[in-house]
Image (cartoon, rainbow, N blue to C red; front, side, top):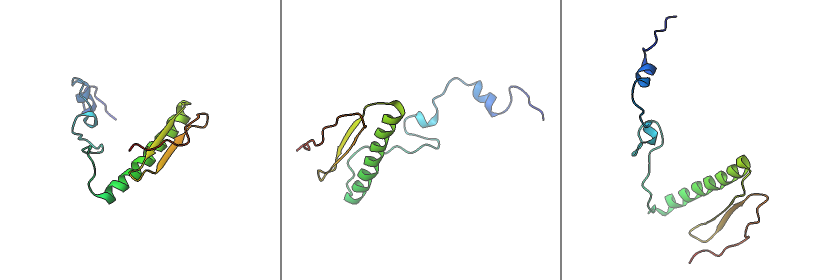
Length: 102
């Protein structure tokens, strides 16, 4: 086993000035998820699927931050049909119902 200091891909990286990792650069790159344009999804079926996935994701994140950080968290999400979805951490007094925006 022979190892020469200053050779190989790691040493080349060490000798370069600090570079932002590709996943943090504007426009993506690397193996990270691609960025999507944030605008209304025109296709109703795709919009509903995206709403459902993102709603579940944000409610899951609310629960996680509540548990991991012992934080008091309340999240309310209304669908385009006006249906209410919420998460309220156990020790938090959340408002049981808020009327949707007109």
